[in-house]
Image 1 (spheres, rainbow, N blue to C red):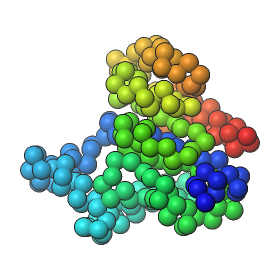
Image 2: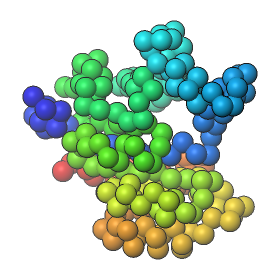
Image 3: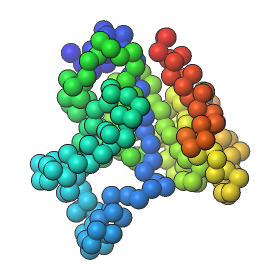
Length: 209
């Protein structure tokens, strides 16, 4: 049974959330700070996250991320990609085996943190969502047009930084509209909570469909 069919039979909506990793330290930067040579930091960081090579490191990273989300819900499963730049159906099947699907109405998958690789792999989601942030710059739609073209919803986070940055909101919104005339944009700040109600309402609305 395919992943979409399995969730459809359970009447569960499935959203694929793609988030840029920019604006925070990358795994390569962390490896450099940990003492790895700059020319081998990327390879070293990838190896450290490979559960077959360093299972304890992978488990620790997964536990930290899961604990952060579990402050808000117990229905969370950490997926380790083993260094891959995107999720695939097999990974999701394994994650679903750990969840009580009868309790859920919607599943939101947070994909690997980049705006390139995950776009080319269809997971059978009902909705594709891309999240960008003010601190990442207003040129994301120009740099990564495919993800903005294919997304049903565009989220713009960290609006609390707008006044102290050179982010041009009109430019960002105009470029998104050029690429995706039917895509909706929701602006909010996770720090202040302003605008989050619209994001929550969107989730509740798709749950009813």
